[in-house]
Length: 215
Image (cartoon, rainbow, N blue to C red; front, side, top):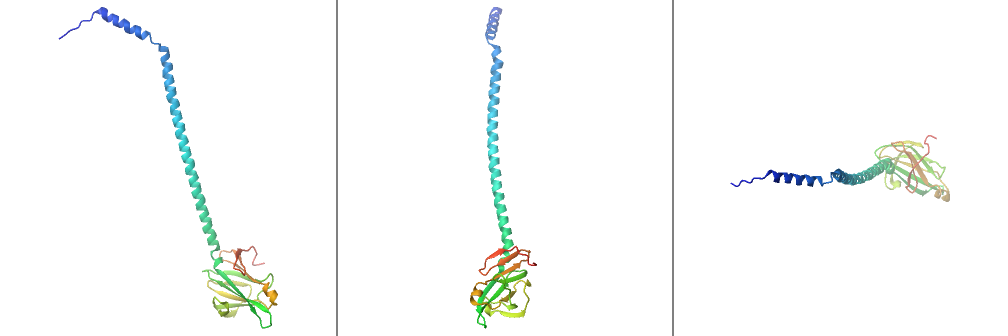
């Protein structure tokens, strides 16, 4: 075994050399350097956090926009469905009118109204032109697509208080001169089962009516 003896002088020399080397370092710059390193790290972390937050905000805004669009579409669909239900019964009320020759030499209107809905309609008012009222109103026992083939029953009054589901009624006008008959086309106003007032003209155009059936 080799034993190396180090003299006390050599050890002292090495200690002196190490002390000199350590004394040569500018320890005053180390805290500044460490502070700069930590500051740079903190700045990088802040930049990363800010970028991450921006991504999250952008994703949240996109999600909110998509949700808002979906809600808008759902509301539009609900409104359309509600509007369709609102018009549903009124669209099943049909009116057919024929301008016919009268025995007096004039002409008159014969109008058949059919309620094809599953609920009654009320307060039926028929007008010929702006002012003329029906001269006769008849129950229809058997309605035909050609109203001349419909089987009429008892005489009813006008305005007609109610027309049940699946029922029909015929209104006859008075006799007019031909040109007056042509300008006195029939129109119907009625109230549906939801209390909405409607007007149906000779051309089959259905609109809401603001008139008061009791006035």
